Amino acid sequence: MTTYKSDFLRVLDERGLIHQVSDAEGLDALCRQGTQTAYVGYDATATSIHIGNLISLTMLYWFQETGHRPITLMGGGTSMVGDPSFRDDQRKLLTVEEIATNIESIKRVFGRILRYGDGPTDAMMANNADWLLKLNYVEFLRDVGRHFSVNRMLSFDSVKLRLDREQSLSFLEFNYMIMQGYDFVELNRRYGCRLQMGGSDQWGNIINGVDLSHRMGGPQLYCLTTPLLTTASGAKMGKTANGAVWLNADVFSPYDFWQYFRNTEDADVGRFLKVFTRLPLDEIARLAALGGAELNEAKKILATEITAIVHGREAAEAAAETARKTFEEGGLAADLPSVAIARAEIEPGIGVLTAFVKAGLVPSTGEARRQVKAGGLRVNDAAVTDERATLGLADLTSEGVIKLSFGKKKHILLRAE
Image 1 (cartoon, rainbow, N blue to C red):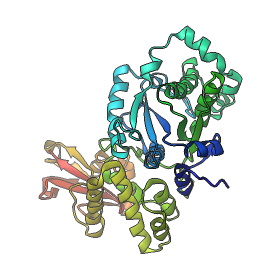
Image 2 (image 1 turned 90 degrees about the horizontal axis):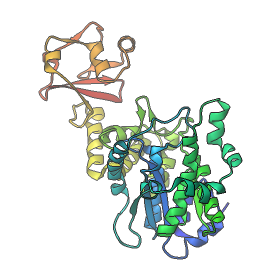
Image 3 (image 1 turned 135 degrees about the vertical axis):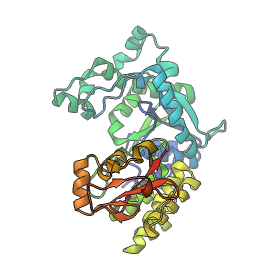
Image 4 (image 1 turned 90 degrees about the vertical axis):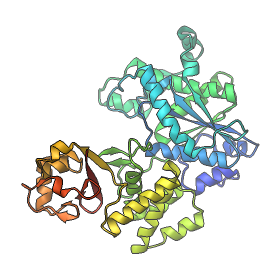
């Protein structure tokens, strides 16, 4: 077991954030030689990044907190190609305008986690479109492409998976690996960046940059990856029945985000507190040791702390209060997720099964019917017993909503407009 001397690697090791390091001893020594620069790359293929990206952002946070300068690199150039890693199909190509919109949306999350500015340890934002879109293709192939072995690239697990399934891997996607490797070299040239970090599934792409710098006569670069988190039951972290757990509030509400972590499995509480929160390790150990009903309080702390990091303390406390009113008091909280429905549609009466489908609580009327028989659906906290029942204006509360519940943890407000 490696014993780290630098504050940065020691903190990451204590919190279970290290999976693999290209040269642990060398990086540890580098981090003790004054302020260093590291980056994580983020492709702008959606309007938000997800909970998996929060782990790499957490690594950048601790990098900054231990006296170093983090770079968040936006893939304005690479997003036009798309990362083929572990995908079953080819990514949809985005327009320049779509990528620019996505970048502006994603930036909002970075600013809540990292401190940006002009100081020696202030974070900075970069965009690889600034250099990739200006490259001369023939010169790039001659000066950079010649250092990449196709045989080695074919050996990467992310590529082998596609080939083993006899799925198409376009030349466009193949170039992604070269472009990402070049990003590292360019960031070192511009900003003295010596470290790239990312998830363990990115190891092949990251190590390419380390090798490229060596082959081009550059300085020693380093790479560090974090584990891909799974739950204690083996499920992939960050997935719900409705899709990914996004970090932007307009895609995944702070309340839903809070609820996701409130529902953490018992065995994961201590680990998630270490990985995602900034609580002291002795406090985390105390919370992880709780059992029974007390462990539920630890889960609430976990949910509130992570939500505060991503959405701000005010939003986190509002989400916690909404949950308290909903679950402990059986009341109606204004911050519950809501779905709008035209008053003209509800006035003549809407079938209760249809209402639950419109609210997104169940995928079909057939499933809604099964849940009625199982006693799993409630309207305004009253169990639905008649699948032929209709909801009308009389069911609206004084706030002009109808509270729909599926089980104990899923609630939606049907809001008449």
